[in-house]
Amino acid sequence: MFSYTRLKIRRLTSGRKERRQKKTLARRAKKVSKQCGSVGKNLIVFGDDIELIAAEKIVIGDNFKLNNKTLINAVSGVTIGNDVTLSHGAKIISTGYDLDLWIKTGRRKHFDNKPVKIGNKCWIGTNAVILPGVEITGENVVIAAGAVVTKSIAESNVMAAGVPAKIVKKLGE
Ligand SMILES: CC(C)(COP(=O)(O)OP(=O)(O)OC[C@H]1O[C@@H](n2cnc3c(N)ncnc32)[C@H](O)[C@@H]1OP(=O)(O)O)[C@@H](O)C(=O)NCCC(=O)NCCS
Image 1: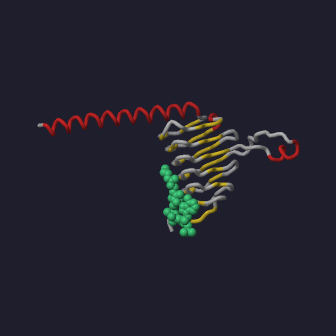
Image 2 (image 1 turned 60 degrees about the vertical axis):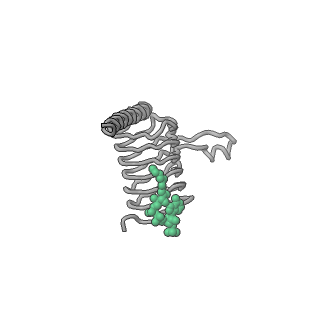
Image 3 (image 1 turned 90 degrees about the horizontal axis):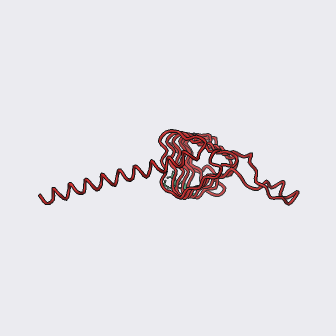
């Protein structure tokens, strides 16, 4: 009798916990969706410490997983395909200083002409950085933790790692 009651209480509390978690996930997804230009189905946002700059220029496909401490700077525009994960602390940056202008005139002005495009089925590991103008057009691309991606990746089924990131492994071989 005693253990039956305890079981009932445990079920009740875990049900409540689940409902609370669902509510939190829904609230976060709503908040991010409201800011972004467009967002597909099943957005999951794991945390509240997410920075979106020029969020109205972010286009996201279906099943995007956005982890905590991430940054998307979309001044030049950022397009993300379906089934993409941006891991904890990873960053997508689409602007910086226009170096020509800086060197020639001393004026520091941000450029807005280097959009970033992430294709379908891409996993961007923790603390990786995707720099302005990069296009990851292959499918099943893994960007290893801590990588700094300076050039586009057109191959599918590859893992890129390091600074600057290079393809170091073909996946599924
Ligand atoms: C990329 C990753 C998934 C490993 O993939 P894998 O296919 O199992 O790769 P391997 O372990 O076989 O490594 C292949 C080579 O890449 C190197 N490598 C792996 N991860 C690396 C990294 N983050 N940076 C630099 N080199 C890396 C390995 O040392 C190995 O080099 P070697 O061939 O000279 O020995 C893993 O290293 C990683 O970075 N995971 C990210 C974890 C993460 O962000 N989690 C967040 C959860 S949402």
